[in-house]
Amino acid sequence: MSMFIEMHHRYSNSDPVLFKKENIVAEGGSVKIITKNYLRKKSVFHPYENNPDYSARINTFYYSKDEKLIAGYWEAPEGWFEAEIGEQSEINYVIEGEIELICGGKKITAKKGDCFLVESGEKLKWIVKKLIKTIFFIYPANEEIVKFFKGLEK
Image 1 (cartoon, rainbow, N blue to C red):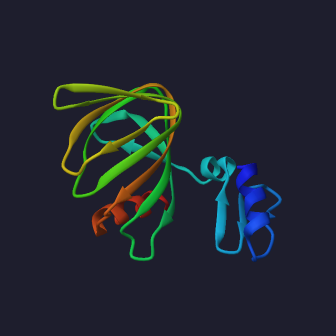
Image 2: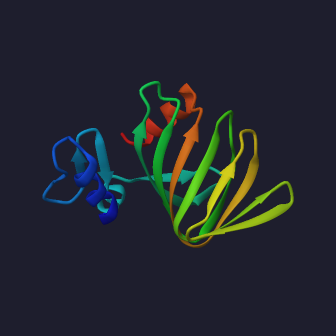
């Protein structure tokens, strides 16, 4: 990120990047840096109906103006859950950890530095092998999924 900040100072005509005391969010003009402290601090617990003993932490830190794009942070311990993806697709970038995804009898493993795409309509089992942290993007989000995520935040 320091390279990004240096480039921002060098090429931006806006105000310099300002860091809040807690180092939670940094801003420079219309550019915002969302720090790992903010992602973790603002995350909420999300239980999974098909495995009531399992829960993850989620922070949906961005909704586009039309709420069709959602960006968030997902952190989950070792364990499993099943999910059916609705009309939206989901892209996850693995910051750390390891996850196995089983879909249609096929198994894939994503590790730190990998990115995986789950297309709309897929039903799959998520098996977290090592504590995982991801940044995810959901598109196109519908009213139901926006309501679900915003409901977690309350």
